[in-house]
Length: 313
Image (cartoon, rainbow, N blue to C red; front, side, top):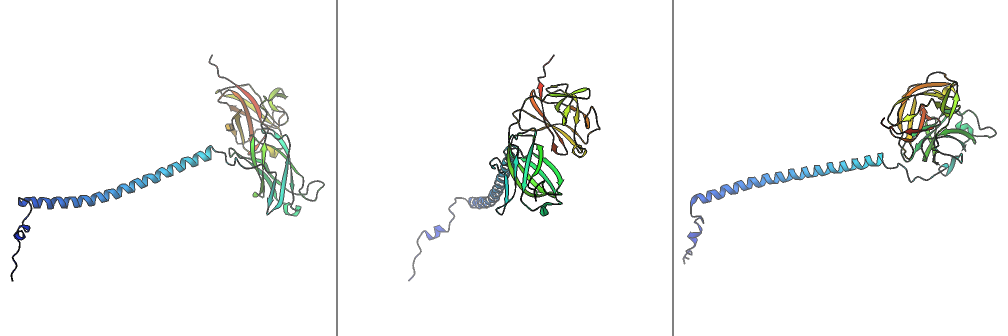
């Protein structure tokens, strides 16, 4: 028995478009859409890559800014506690007894008590380097000295005495080195310095502002922003006065040191001093300033001066 196909069978074979070119136009648009979609996928991938790369750069830039801020503005070890002794494996290696009046700007005495037998220390070079925990400033507190014998009246190095000055108030980490190798450290709080203007004294035929028998300069006065000539004079042993000279300055209420003069070496004796050198210095702002001479990285006594305002005539 033959089944008759429905009438719409033949109609399904016909195009739904009234005209033939409509079918070809749809095919063309489909091909264009397909290619466009592929391009869009590629563009989207490229856009995602660019966005990811840009985000990474932003993160790196932010990290760089944060690191720069922390390294330049933030205190380095502000939470480090004061500590007068150093232990290794629960064994005391040394302890320090500073002058109770310890303050910045002047030389004060220290007594170090080492517990090691003298045989372990003898023949080694002992030095002390100090780091200001708030600014990171590092100075040579004690240049290398050769350990040759025990402390007087002791079997070991139980009463090693020294004296030195530090330029800024606050906590300092004192690192003890033997033959330039770290041996241990302590943390001490250095008190606020006096900001009383340093007095003058006579040497030869000149009046010098400074500390008699240690350091001073001929002082014609300071005016903010104006340079002037100043003759520096120094007293001390030959080895103490050898090396590069730097004159640093810090303003009252600040802890940023400003270099105002530098010389590779000092001149000979002059005006009753062991060494001397002429300098040209200027300080940028009015107020009280502390001038801090360093020789070969070691600070000498500091000198407080008053800088007057630069008033137009």
